[in-house]
Amino acid sequence: MAVYDLGFAVDRSNPPIRKVPMAVEVRAPLWFDSLGIGYRLAYDEPARLREYARARWAGPPAQLIQLKLVRDSGLVAAGQGRARCVLRLDITEFSQVFDTATVSRAVLQGRVQWLDRSRGRLAEQTFAFDQAAGSPDSKGGVAGLTAVVEQLTAAIGVWEQERSGVLADCLR
Image (cartoon, rainbow, N blue to C red; front, side, top):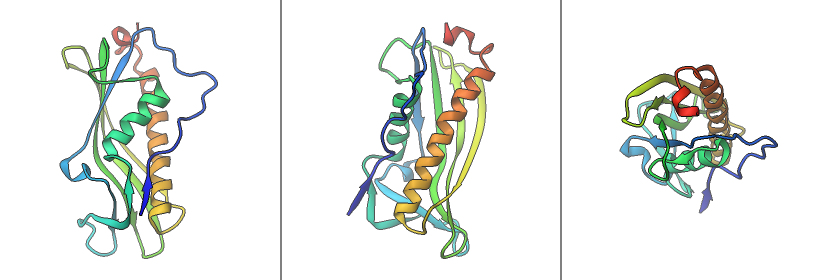
């Protein structure tokens, strides 16, 4: 049985410095709350989510994504401090999608919201990341899924900078 996570923390020479901590909360539908590494056959029953028999995640994907964001973005887990604001991610898709029997890609889709202390929405953005998988198996799927989570992490940093005016109370 192969057990995977999303890898080591990204080596940053200039880690994000926050005057006030911002919390992160990652949510996913119940069917993503398993340790199975999901894949879909887009060419045959694309609505059917399947799992690899001999490969598992080390934890539920939402928790792995949250841990990656905490490590790589200078965020804190929701409920773990006096954060003024919360970055909430709602994951709607996190799977390897096979377009043919030998060609696959990693897909991460959902919505990100910045919420104030009372959970009022300050900003919202949908996201969809797609990355070719290196091989048509669990190893290639995990590599692609890790890459799309890294793309998400980078995009969140960009979105935070673009919305710095709206998020001013969160960033001070």
